[in-house]
Length: 439
Image (tube, rainbow, N blue to C red; front, side):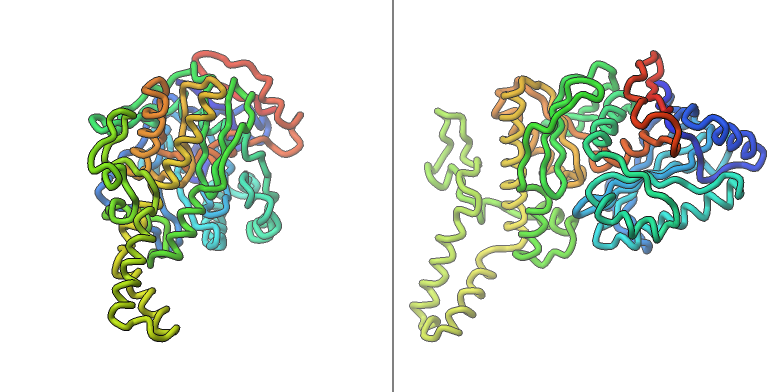
């Protein structure tokens, strides 16, 4: 564990330290480190669901940085098609000796005004705590929204928005989590649902499966050496879109809650429905899905036949009404939600396995806001990798899986007009600290 270099700043700074810390940051930008020594995740009561606050933000678990003392003058945003993810540093208010923490928040991209309003509050707090000499808080941004919403962000925040490449940020963020943060990365199995992996430096090569609105699969061979090798358009946006049409759920979290209480066997055709039991010869359990939504047509036709036998289809208008009524009675939103969640997750898991097999990659990391720590999603992805690889490959998950891009953008902070852009990639790794050059 050590320090990851970034231009330094903070949101809340005691008066006795403020002047010297800011002076150092201004005179020597890019030389102050984010000190991750002793970092740990702040555990919260998992039985209490995370719900949006009045400002529209949904807060996720913080990472404490007990040994970081320097000023941090920037925040980072990763704006995707569905969610905007924000990372910022704040000092522990109790004592100057307690360091600070990285805060993780997300907003719906459709409500980007709420996100920008929150950032404006951070800007105001920064100026109050650090004074006019500190200058403006810098805004780092990545993801498609960093370009699509660039003018809107710049106008709302009144400062230049520094845009960073999305893939660069994803890899830098994941490398940081794998190598620096204890109890961040875990594997899943039914007997040990959250087995934590030790933070380590020997992490390459690996496959990143980033699941947002769509899915990107990235082969990472070494630090700053990666390529997008595939993906699929059937991702979180697919699930969100279809379930918004098929159920009454209004948010993605509502859809996941429906799925938790559903029975996909009421909608999917299972191996047991075809064989009456397991198909052991080829390793298929009776509960294995043979066809997603495979029962829908048959059950729908049964409902139509019943309505027809009772005279319910004598008129075209009544046919439509009875057809819709039969469908509503036959299929519960919970069952539909679980079926579609399994369909999307199984598809992603199998494609990920095939890509890992093609490129000889044993370690597969799943990131992106689609996962959200949801047990059924994690279980499905993990089972798919284990089943198809016959146990030779591992699926890894992260507690901050949706924040890879925003953390990467946070770490890539480079002062404006200070040296060559991205030259930090040439800086060697210095043990026991990991430093990215900020010149």
